[in-house]
Each structure stands twice: as C-alpha cells, then as structure tokens.
Image 1 (cartoon, rainbow, N blue to C red):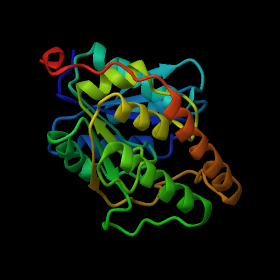
Image 2: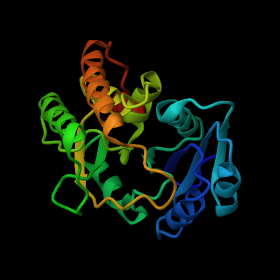
Image 3: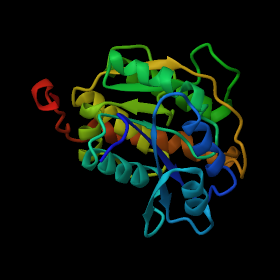
Image 4: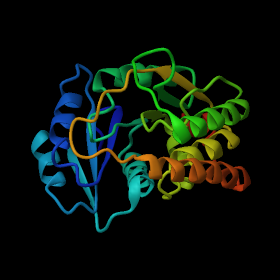
Length: 243
C-alpha cells in the first residue's frame, strides 16, 4: 500500500542516462514522495538505474508510448490507494523543486498544470510548435473557463477525481495524449488550474523535436483537439465517492 499521499509517476523510454539522477532529485525533496518509474518497454538499463536510485519500477512488456505508460501509472495509483499523482519527465526537464508548487494547485482544482509559458523561466518555442500551442491554449481555456497558456505540458498533477477520469479515458496516441486527456477531463467536469514553473534543459539523451517533427506536432495536436471534442464524457467521482 501507499507510504505517501503522493505518487510521482515517471514514464521512461530508454532514459538510462538521466532517470537515476531524476529519481534521486525527487526523493531528495523534503516531502515524502513515492516514485513509480514506468519502464515503457526499454531496451537499455532504464529500469535498473531507476530501481538503484530508489524508485519502484513497473515494467511494460513493450513500448506503449507516454499515454499508455501514464495510464498504467494511474491504475497503479488507484490500486495502491494514492489520493494524488503527479507526472514528472525522466529526462530532468521538470524541476523536482516545483513538484510541491504544482501539487498546491490541487487545493483549488482537480488537475494542476505546471505551465512553462506563465511569466516564469526562459523556456520558449517558435514556428509550428508555437502556433499550435497558442491555438490550443485559447480553445481549451474557453472550455475550462480559466486562462491556460501551456495545455501540452506533461508536468501535471491530479487528485482522485482526475485519477478516476484518466483511468476511464487516457489516450495512448503520441503527441495527442496531453490534449485529448485534458479536453475530455474538462468536458467530464474536472476543474483545471495552471501553476507557473521554470523548465530546465534536457539533462541527457537526444531532444525529440526538429522542424519536421514540429510540423507533424502542429497537425496531430489540432487533430487530437477535434477528436477529443467528439469523445464521450467520462465518469468522474462525486464528492461523496471521493470521501
């Protein structure tokens, strides 16, 4: 069973260079967090390094993508009784010192997003990725009835209502999981709030974006948005069910 109220879910695919240090950074925080690294069909020593650093490791039989890995993590959280979860990338870009700040956003919402474009830090994007992010933020802000500037951020936390909704619907499609899951969550009744954070440079490995991938990102993200708007609403726990 859970030792902590918070489960840090860290999806990882061939991140042996960075996952150990990222896990140690999380565990060095004063708060008592449990860390679950979801080994997403890795072909390197990601799982070994994560376990050595002190994480629990959930090994998937083959690569399912970030969405599939996170869905497995949410199921683990529910089965082990965690009331709160937060996603942290294994490559070190999410600063573990900001975990507590993002979790505080759950005091007023079901989902808290660590936002990169909210007047904190120097992280920036340009070209097709920027166009997509601005468009998506405007549309989803209207749906959520609150100002959101970074709806593609994976640095996000959720409470039990969010966990139940994610388990019911969390897509596995790469580049669509953050948008699709957020839109369906909002349409299903979950509330959202963003928290400004500063993004760090990737601590190792190769970046996943280039001009060609950015163009694909633009098209797939917008497609994911429109598909999400047509999906059925998911079941979200009521206040009585959470209690």
